[in-house]
Length: 353
Image (cartoon, rainbow, N blue to C red; front, top):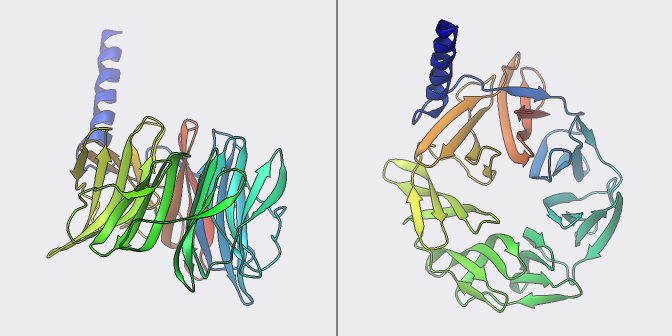
């Protein structure tokens, strides 16, 4: 019995070392394939992945058809993926952008066949439409929380920040010197963050319920911002790239409520827009894989960065996880896979569960 216990302990230690050592590449740690019904047209663009618990997740995007863009929506019910075509405008030209859960509702930014922006809302299995106050030439980003929603973009007069307070839309003014807002996210109606291009370069803006102000975040020199991940605890993580004489490198900045800490994990020049906080408490990012037949993921836990590969896919020449979401105790991935001799198809993978 003692010999068996010792063997088991050694096995556990070896497994932990394999996945926890800085810069380690782990064997496939439980990633499994989830079948996805095929898209009607190819190629496809994946916009966003929003999940609420283990039994509900939504992926938005659009197909590139001969007649233009067509909106695409897939639903995860905890067991399988299915395509949803019940939303308003599902069969018309257009596209779907960011998706957010607002209380018991799902909100999705939709550009319809007329080029008009609107918010699709799903509650108790029924869809409704919240129209925007004006048509924009560019719909750059969208976010929503209970009591507030924002859409940022441009019309012919320049930058527009549209704000919804639960009853009406208004136009908000960014700080002087802001030329373009690249992205926006929010924790509450009185705590929203945006990343923007300004007179002095990239900057972080923050809404405090009264006005947008420069958050005075000292971003790395010669860098840009890809995303901001806000968490209920108050923690915030900025992901971006910095350009150096040796090429690009990824940086992460973490706010603990008092100060910022900047790190440069060994991720190369990975785009961090799909970064999520996993069920294990670590940050997870999809990466460009060095194996044509497998996806690749990075796990960043403090100073430790580890890597894992998805399942091997026969005859695949390019596997691209494009969006991640935490669904209960599982991590879900959604993207595309290209098999030799065919066009890219949708794919999904799961870690845990």
